[in-house]
Length: 390
Image 1 (cartoon, rainbow, N blue to C red):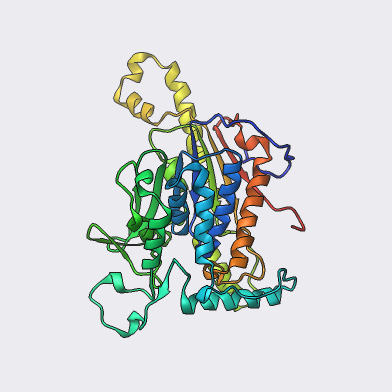
Image 2: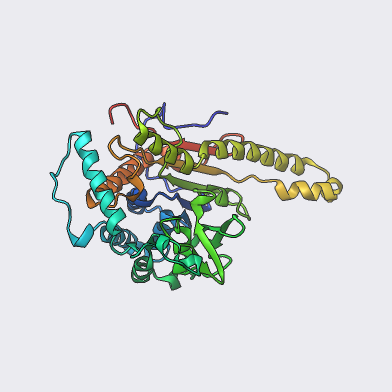
């Protein structure tokens, strides 16, 4: 059966409480685009859809920590505080531009100037340039090999995230990083180890801008170097549970042909960091269909067959759980360009936040999003598409 999408159904509004054992919120990496995820979470919180498990990579890990590390009634506030802090502007001054910019070329010029400001002066509470740059100095530690100093982020995380709460078991938190020596992806998970500021920073240590982060004598780079989405962590989790998963992506694999060199760079970033969710969910759908068929066959087998090594092997894979995978992808505006992931202006942050809030509100208006799937494979996928003219 083909995946069901928003196209062809009408939003009717729904107050149905989701009948799932687990709600998961999955946050992709994407730098300054991450404020979109803040708007998404605000809409979820207003709908009283609080996740049991939040997982993130890079900026998604920071947003995930802000959610897991605060009481439900303070999470949106802390997300807003973080994003307002890092978009304060150089020297605490906002750019004085018209409230609304209707010309895309003018808007692009404004965005590019703010992105240049971030390159030159950093983002308050997040990162600041190393002076002089490490390229001109000898160094004995990979932890110094980055054009920016991220110590302000450690301080800000300490102010906004209660890591005792993070590790209390109230909500599961997972963040991804890349082990520099082996080149393998690594997942830090509160089910397996305590998570502190260093794990969140490791997840966002994207070279060459940010240096590797040391944890227990090992060094880690940004998780997006290997994989920029945590979806597979949830799909492969054991024991399996009925799952409502909201995957919030910041890069779109699909796009138009580039028309100039700037658009070539933009398109390359989109492809490189997009999650390939459709491919992953198609493969998962096929696997779940086999698992559910195996469970039905095992129920009809004689006990002596079920107790054989082969029967026990099949029993370990049998599964009758159901999964709703709700994917949301930020749709880049024409004027954003290749610097969209480091354009830390208050104006753009508010645009991204509003887009995330609007998209999640529209998504939750479709009742099937919160209903258990009835398909033979037990998997429902939903991909909100913008309507023409939006």
